[in-house]
Length: 355
Image (tube, rainbow, N blue to C red):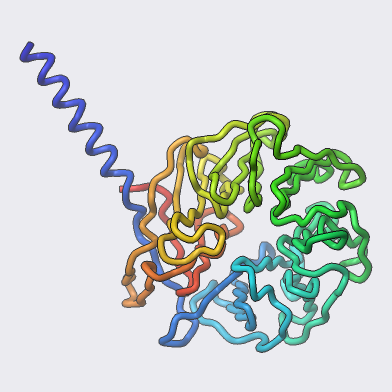
């Protein structure tokens, strides 16, 4: 009996220690944008060609760093047209030329070819939520529009954003992604709660209606994440419902039991790492009560990263996570660092384990 009791106590101690060990992501650090006030950031990107070049975007301003995010300058102010009613603003760079920038905005795509000094607006559809470049042909630009009605859906430009064709109509697309290894495989999630799939680069689509299968009653889809090593495995986040998982390319779905309802992303270089954002108090609007979660086992178990706290980093930089709204998750090109865009600025960590 004593042996059994001792074994039970040791087991409880181990489990308690394990649970405690998974409650703290180590070494959050804070980016400084050269001001004592918090700078709300809605999108972030790093050049794959030159990882020292970073861009950050707010709802009115584009910031640029040429030293890996240590110091920043304003590349453009009051360029206008950003998505004032959306928290996440997509920003992507040409993989070979970091002076070519695309930003999703309210009137369409904002494009710069001179590192953000000047901008042109491509007005083909309003309210752009996602921008993707074909990795095999970066002049092929894809965009998702959340606009209700016919403008809403998926659009493509084959000439670097000059002219556009609509590939998915009447589906206001709040989430969009493509298989990086086979760009013909595309997936879109809509604000109306449907999941759309194409296996021919957007030529035809099949709709997974909300009343079908495990996605019954699905509200607005807020994120789609494709496992880069197993592209048939994907995660879907839905406002108010949390994360669903598919192991067969989106044909069948199961709820994971996790309620990360704003965003979910695989680390593209290490898909065993999954990061997500939940908004338990304000749903898709974000705000106080938001939490950033981390999983190191492919999304089976998530822990709170405590990004929703007051943080003072090793350089005495402050970040008010308690009142922050979490806007987006971004990874460095080599996958070694994760950035969280918030209304209180940008925090990042090189630490992927928990202590």
